[in-house]
Length: 127
Image 1 (cartoon, rainbow, N blue to C red):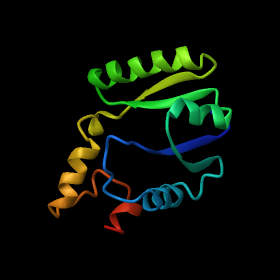
Image 2 (cartoon, one colour):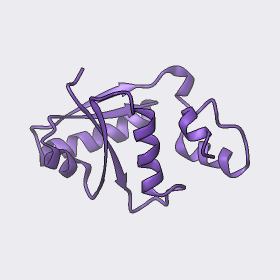
Image 3 (tube, helix red, strand yellow):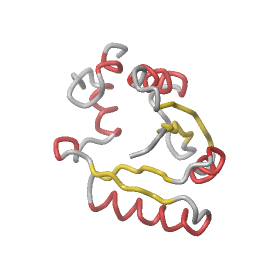
């Protein structure tokens, strides 16, 4: 769909990540090491400003459910008002992963469960 994909790993001031930024970036780089058109970058602040810094014309957002869509649409509407030249594109997940969330996966990890069905093997091998 695109010539290049930048995976933005953002700092969310309302969340406490389980793993440091450097580790999350390293995992993404490892996962996509054979994809020359994919790169990973960190940012803080508004995602739409990160898009502006990159000169991006599109922002991809994942949708698992109707609830996700409503939340993401509100963000997309606000982003459109701030930066109308960046279009939000929504991609739906495979049904297998529709109920998987980072909260649930973190809980599994904290309790020593196997998360191999929910995260890439590059992450599993480090856990």
